[in-house]
Structure formats: C-alpha cells, structure tokens
Amino acid sequence: DIQMTQSPSSLSASVGDRVTITCRTSHDISNYLSWYQQKPGKAPKLLIYVASTLQSGVPSRFSGSGSGTDFTLTISSLQPEDFATYYCQQSYTTPTFGPGTKVDIK
Amino acid sequence: EVQLLESGGGLVQPGGSLRVSCAASGFSFNTFPMNWVRQAPGKGLEWVSGISTSGGSTNHADSVKGRFTISRDNSKNTLYLQMNSLRVEDTAVYYCAKGRLGIGTGFDYWGQGTLVTVSS
Image (cartoon, rainbow over all chains, first blue to last red; front, side, top):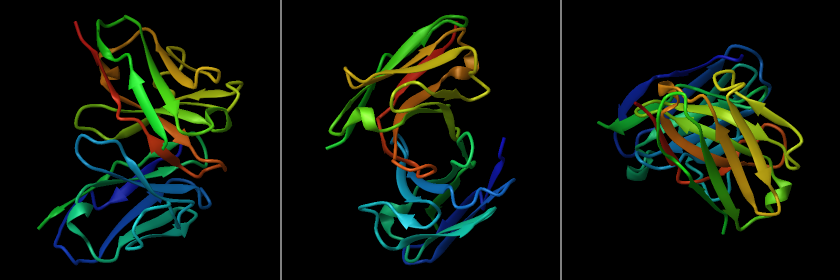
C-alpha cells in the first residue's frame, strides 16, 4: 500500500494569509493526487485533481502542484470560509487518503 | 443537479450485518465508477470500496475484504454496500462518492453520509 503523510497536521492562520500544505507519498504516484476540503459535519468537497487541475466552481485562490512523491496545496489568500480540514488522496493504486491538515483561526 | 442520498445506517451488534444504499440522480449513473468512503468519529477519511461502471470490477480495502461487498443496480441508479461480520471498529459515517471519468481524477460528488454504529 502507498503510505501518505501531510504536514503540518494543523496550523493557525489569519484571513488574508498565504497557506501551504504538503502531502508526501511513499511511492511515485505520477500526478494521481487529489485534494479535498471538509468542514465539520459535512461531506468532503473535491478541490483539485491530477495534482493541479482546479475542480469546477472552486475559487482560483486554491492551487495545487507537484508530481512523483511531493505535492502542495496552496491557498493564496485565506478567506473565512476556508477554515476546514484538508485531505490529500492518491488514486495511483487502491485509493488512500492522507491524515488531514486542520486549518483554524489564529 | 447531482444528488447522492445514502440510507440504511443504524445500530447493529458486533458480528451482525447491514446493507447501506446510495440513490443517485442528476447524472448518467451507469457511466461513472462509484465508491464508498468512511469516517470514524473524530478521525480521517478511509476509502472502503470501489466499483466499475458495469459492476463487473470491484475492489475493497484490506480492512473490509471478505466482509464487505459493493454492488450497483444501474436500472435503479443505486449503489449498495453489504456489510457482514461487523466489528466495533467499523463504526463510522459511510459516504458514497462518485468517481470522475479518467483514472486518478478523484471523487467529485459525495452524499451526506449515513452513520453505522457497531455496538453491543
């Protein structure tokens, strides 16, 4: 199985901050990496797929990059509605999710 | 509008069985792969099972292999998860999730989830 790590596990930030979350995989997954946002009590929402493609309807302040084993989700200017938990997911093999990064208000 | 509506969750004793369903609407159900993803209370996401468009190919996480079976009825636009030999650690919210066309392109729509509680 492909193991996944995310860093940091949590972070505190202010509205307007630039936020970067990193996801690493134990094996090369090419660009088969997606990012999701989940708010408490809600289902996850797809933000980005194949590492850098923005899902329809997702604000352009979200961006993704990377390939192979190292990936990054960036929020260019954090908005109040962005406080949530973010998960990466690989689909190169049997899907697995990263442990999540909780973004809360500083 | 794409809608996924799960049902069938509830309280079941360890060793028991339960079938959860996901009714889909707003898209051509028979042309997309489907998945089940679960989330234990206060924990992260865990992919459980996936199924191809025709239902001819299925895959399950090691943690449920041999106990859970995913299936679909394209005539009813419905996805199922049959769960047998349930364990306390299977307690979770179970989400159905629609796959996108194209390998490795993520799950673009999710249901609201149905809670399965395994407890004596």
